[in-house]
Length: 468
Image: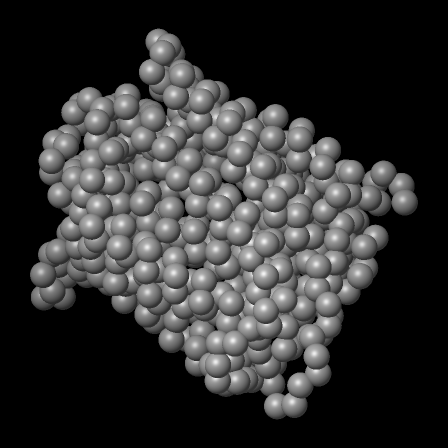
């Protein structure tokens, strides 16, 4: 295979990629666009409200990634079972996801209920430069308390939607997400500002709207799954018991625990990084909230292509098509990076414009613009590292992905940022650049591991035949 064919595929290859990635892009795009609009609505109320909600969402971000990590180990098996046409294996992994999600949910609820305010105040130890710390904490806590109700439908939704995607069904979760985010958008407008005779509830209204939207999303996915049991055979008899073969349970735990630990420690690491940056003042908290919300919208392309790597490569490994899997991974990585040069350019153009829509200070707007320019320049780096992660993960090399992803954050990124924040006179913009650009080292390590082919591995065996 020539070097060009290794990285550039035929039209049929991109049709296959788009069939998987485009619905995910649409779903994530609409979700992040509405999140941006929500953020703008909250931002119109003031910096304290915006910062309080941002801090609460940072805590929920840790929970969300714990769910993602807890389900990802079983998801690797789901994709490979589907690739080998093993419906019973898919059903067993679905049951494992349900149990895992319930455990993470209970732990998350307990932590947020009993220690929510203490966790929020960890982010409020910087200078009181653009708002009142006590008011910011109060807004964050009131938002968090309502959002806890939505964790139950969120967990069930991730369990169902993840299994559907891993078995090739990306359209149903996309449709559910579209309806959900539109519901969220409309209710946000009505409940935040008090329209059509409804009370103006501010940040509490934003939380109520999100919770209702999550129940709507889950309902649509449940109906769609049960109406097409011939296509989604895993759901037939899935709740007759929660029994899972002991050997499979052990295998998922062995391979999945590093993923759960990775997402937990990585998300805690991201939260800790935000806390480090916040030591330079509340203006940094507000600017980070703006920049992360906007950049997340532009990141949907490489995020969706990372999911495509996990699905397509995982299925090819499950079918023992190792050469195809290796080619698919290389082409997807090249395609993702190429796309991100274009998307990064668009983000750079938008960077000075969108922060002007927020009701905040010029200092916060300027900081947000600088952060966005840095994110735009680093987007191809993030894209390559993201694809490396999912390539390594698709073959069940979860311990390696733990070292590659989580250990890198704690050993390299966090010590670097902490030192620069607390022991240098560098500006917050210079520090933020260092914290983002250092991922270039991660790309070098990931590229070497992918090229070595250490991830090429089939981890599933055929389940016993069943009746029913």
